[in-house]
Length: 208
Image 1: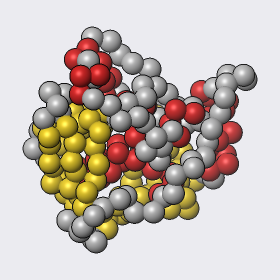
Image 2: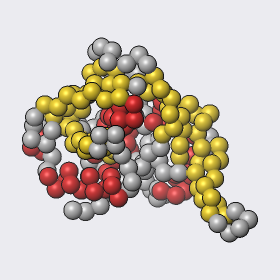
Image 3: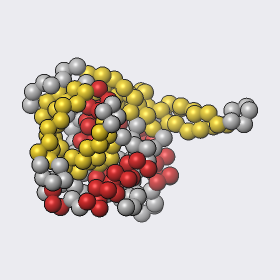
Image 4: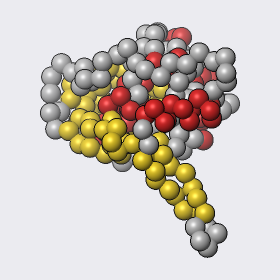
């Protein structure tokens, strides 16, 4: 197994809809690497395009039930009218957090690595994780759905005693883009900050 580099905001792959794929195209080695990378980064989910792989594949953890899912070609087929606002972050947008409104319940269809159909009914935190990761596969980032007035930059600063404490500083999206250019990208990199995808409610045929 190997750790995979997680690409950062501004990388063009994050703004592309990942390609549908057959289960046989997704190797056990890649799945193992994706899972290992998620755990190493202390994440609860990771989409293939976050490691610059153009496939509709994600891994996600249901912390309440201690389950790990590998989903290929996942699609939200239903969601609740009830919405919940919570703070989100992202491995591809380190240092950032913002409040995002998402459906409290969702139903997801996908296939597993063996090509078998999966139907998941999720609620609360796991529903949020699935919505976040499926958005990734469609070129959508959580900042596209966030209340940008709640956007904050997180970093540790020393207090008067010499100890480090978390500092939460309000920041604009333009300032975020400038910082990501300086921190994560080279001068000649192709940069794509904005999405062509619309950021309305995630597709749903019926309410969950």
